[in-house]
Length: 158
Image: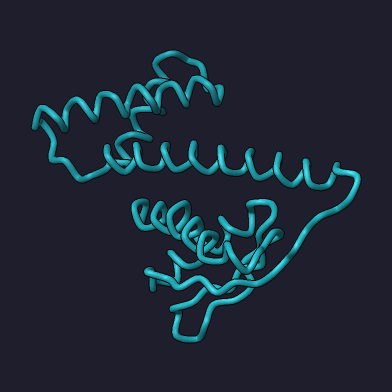
């Protein structure tokens, strides 16, 4: 279905004689809409492509929101007169076990300011994460945030 969508986007660009990125992107979305309607009507077999594109878009919006919020948190901490950080390393048990899922999760955590993925246990059950603010009382809360915010989204996406 993705190839059909790309083909429809390029066909749109050829029909309009405009090969700018924005026009090809418009053609991609129009092609996606056409494929979605055809899949819903049963004209073409539904391969899950329509749902997967929606999941990817939701994931991108979610991640950019988290990225923006964490950037503000870190900027606020850095601009305070006194730097009040309590860094630490926590072990996050993983529900995922595939290399691609673990890699995506580790990169998402590392790309979010204030946290950094350090290592994965050899049996792929624990991810070690360095966080900027840790308190012995809120370690479980941080673990749950990582699992709920990122790991569940990775599971849904892949």
